[in-house]
Image (cartoon, protein in one colour):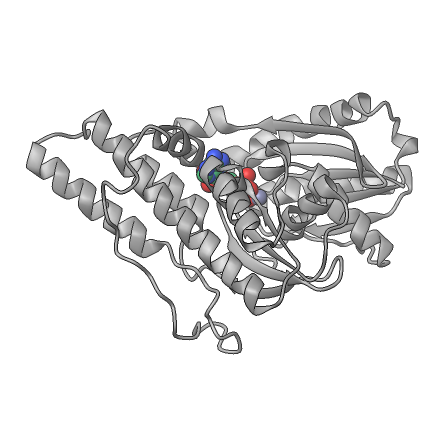
Length: 346
Ligand code: KG4
Ligand code: ZN
């Protein structure tokens, strides 16, 4: 079963071939250089660039995988969540291509793609598993009791962890995207230089009262604390840009707090639900401290932790093809009038 995956939910145009859970090709055209100038993703520029790149990216994925169009058994495309103009490019392309080659199309939730990146990388893992999806748009915990079935355990009430990284980097004048930059700087900093206030969520989420809220996240308080700290130091020193050693210490202390929060809540959820394994996926799972600490804690607590390789952590289409395989096996084919869904839930 050869699946062509297509992903255009944000600022990466991606296509990949996955055959029976093995990657044959994985092509990503990043738009980072275009959006860097604006300090973040500009939706209108993103969709226009997807239109320019999509044909070449798909052709390259076919060529890299030594496949022709008629070798493809099914197409899988990200339906949402994401930027609607970006999603529409992938969805329209995939619908037209599926119709032209007479093969079925499967609609994939981007978050299911991130979750399935764990299975794509590691094969079968022990169930039940608790999976943390941590990216620029989401910070959510899922329970997987059966392969392909995802139960939401908790999510962020405000900012996603990656978003907090990006906003803090912008505030410090470090550039975009912030995650990799702060990760690199943090390595040289003192991670206890600044003590940030803690966040504990005990009240249920007003938007989801049926969940108890114990496994939810919140990063906006930390972001505001960083903002206050930076403004105060700027005033005290009478400078626009803080000295480099202060930036480096701030990066390290911020990263420590984010990683601690993510790991504590993920392991707490795993213990509570008797999980036999833990997965961490999404762009922020590329973070070096998160990976190191999660793997170290896995050894101490005897729950194995699985993370995707770096190429499968950030947005890619191989994970979409993998999630598509899962959907296809369950017989869920997209209708011909499939539409993009900017806030598709999972
Ligand atoms: O999954 P992804 O590529 O796109 C979304 O679905 O959002 O995640 C992108 C996010 C960005 O916020 C970026 O700053 C963050 O992942 N990120 C990182 C690292 N690499 C990427 N955050 C922390 N440390 C990193 N090394
Ligand atoms: Zn993503």
